[in-house]
Length: 87
Ligand SMILES: [Zn+2]
Image 1 (cartoon, helix red, strand yellow):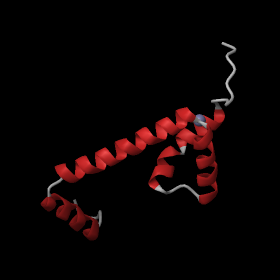
Image 2 (cartoon, rainbow, N blue to C red):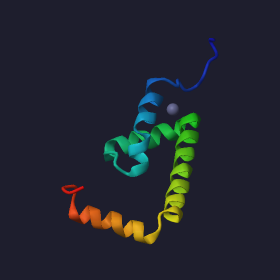
Image 3 (cartoon, rainbow, N blue to C red):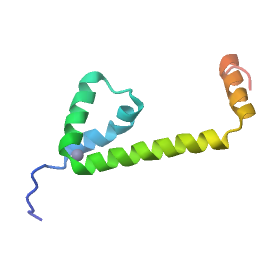
Image 4 (cartoon, rainbow, N blue to C red):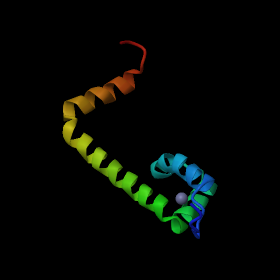
C-alpha cells in the first residue's frame, strides 16, 4: 500500500468533491474556483469526476426539459410568482 503517487489524493480531493456541485453551478466564490481549477488540472480522478457530473447535469437538464410539459412549467412559474403562502 505504499505505492507512490505524484499527487496525494486526500483532503484536497475531498474538498474539491464537496465543492464540485457549487463549482458546476457557478456558485463557488472566485477564489475557490481558482483553486478548484488548479486542482482539476493536476488531478485526473477529480477531472474525471467533474466531467462526469457535468455530463450528468446536461443530460438531466435535457431530460427534464423533455419530460416537463409546457403547461407544467407554466404552473411552476405561476406558483413561484404567487409564492409559497397558499397550498
Ligand atoms: Zn483530486
